[in-house]
Image 1: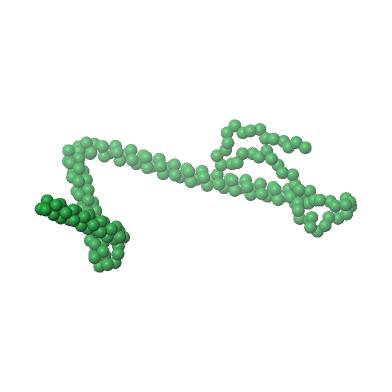
Image 2: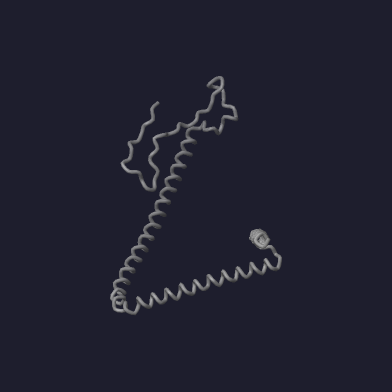
Length: 184
């Protein structure tokens, strides 16, 4: 038995799935020994009632179609309202630019230096604040280090101090040996 196929659609729909070419056949109950013998209880409810199976399939298709329709209506409503808001925003921007452009041209000898001054002042305050935060964190680290609380990086500082002390000791000994060698 060959199943009928649907012709391919020219363009896929945005919201609806493509038509299916596969139609499953309802399962048939398994008959045991003779066709006149009734089905065992285990075989009932497995799709043996063809009418009930078709009703379930139609109900699922109706629910699926209703669900797809609801999704499409929601998408159109949401997309349309967002598109309208976008258009109003664009129109408002064009109107404000049309009004503000002559004012910007007239006041540009005052506005440009003022904008530069404001930018420099803001960057100065931000830099000053950054340096202040850095100084406070260094002071807090030094306090913890001197108080013996062992902050992060204290081991590295101790190792660096030991290396510097060892190198200074080596240089001192080398200098003393050179002085003794020259004097003797």
